Length: 246
Image (cartoon, rainbow, N blue to C red; front, side):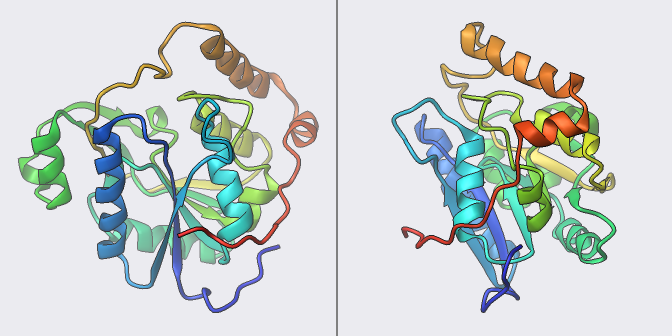
């Protein structure tokens, strides 16, 4: 269980990050500033995987950060290139989790993609009505982006899959797994998630190779497993306090 301390009134945000392009690094800095400006009493963790020389593993980065550094009962898992159109969605999501009825909240119903750096700047300046976007994804097509989590439930469910490497279906697998394990989730369909533009890295999830195939197999395994099998494959993560490197 999470022990609340002096951070109990702080909202913690975990941003998984791997530098692969200059644009993504800029996105990370902009999104960090976005959260710091958006919410009072916020603590932002930039989560990097333990071995930076290995292939990107978002699950390892997020799980390690939550296990060692998150000290509150609620945290926000936020990609380094995503923001929301209204702070009210976070407030509602946190209230839902505090009610002890909902365990995980996706604080948006749709996702829009920025098309270039100029439109990124408009998003960061909250000029949402002036932004040109391409694809409008529905809630079911966007399993990641920003998720507000009950920390204990996240750890109990085994966190994100560390079997999925590179940019794969780790968010999709996580959502499916927690539903099969009986956790309660919610969507706030009246809000939008916006995705900042960045170049597609060489190791993007649509690259066809053995890693992509293994990631797909991992997701299919979760889809076909019974809950008791999932609990064996994804055992609870236990807290292990660490000193965060600033």
